[in-house]
Length: 483
Image (cartoon, rainbow, N blue to C red; front, side):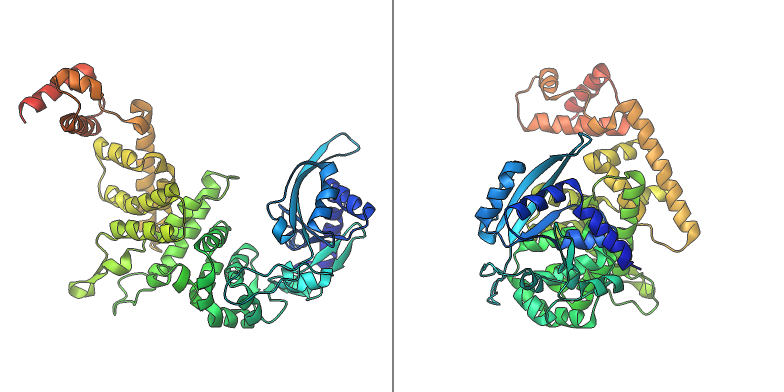
């Protein structure tokens, strides 16, 4: 439970931090109003790390820039048309310690929306209170006037913060009609903050879900990425599925809610996928503590089984199979991430992880030869560590004996990979002869036959390990003469 008294103390600490105090003093001396607004106020009250310093002011963009320039080591005005000026401000305290922060200051806004696009007709406002009422959720509609340190909360954000509720300052249908992206933000905040949307917010998301079509794929990608980057994305993803919004922005996810067969021979693939995502995040934290969220791994975990609906077959005895769902899923993952305008490297990496996620389960059924281990490492390439985490996360069985067996088998596989890597430098497996040497040995010119010989030597290397140049040359000549 949030303590209001403790929250107010945190706000005072934020307001007195060196950069905030310096900016506040400069605007007061220039005769302008200034307030911290939105996220930093909310996060400070919750005891969360404040990562962005967002301000609002009655000063115009030109006036904001004039105040900031003397204290800024860098400044930018790419958001000038929307009233926003950014700067990096560095302050040296009385002990000689430097404090640097990036700040963004926006002129009070009083925008209007046409309901056809999500681009507002930008209009600057006159009062802080009116600016706050046009924001997305009440917990983001609070401001802290500085330097006087006065909390401004026209929509009851403090009460909702205490109750962990997501509510809109105006009617949610009007708010989401103004900007449908706010529906995705509701899902993100449900996960990021652990807050529960009010019933009217959920109902408005259901009613207005079709309007998400006016939001660009790039903005949808950004919000979904922020949602997946939270520590607990399940709540937000379930909200998108339950309201029908996922049908429009990530249809592969609700499609995983397969109809159970009459004997319940297969698990709920939708819930399984959410659990795999949660467990993958757990492996991230345990194996790479303190590192930034790995969106490639998280997308792969969420999408790893999306090929199952298309490959589901019911055989004798109502046995359910999903043959080749890994290959089909890789293609579907590539298609979805392409539609969301992800970059090529991300798309390729996620699709490859989906394609490879079933490869290990053959190992659990019988110890692999060294050649199979080499191929596993070769095929994973730079994604090997992510593949380790994905495969481990994919074990969600409640059968303790089975889970332990799979876990021990993967422990063994990882140990064998380490040992072989030390012996053979597996990440850079190459044939014992390169293309130039192959041409010299066989007396041929560059062309298709060199590629065939190279691939044959690579397979030989994977099967038998390093051979050395002399043995590889002898084996190559034997292969060539028997063609």
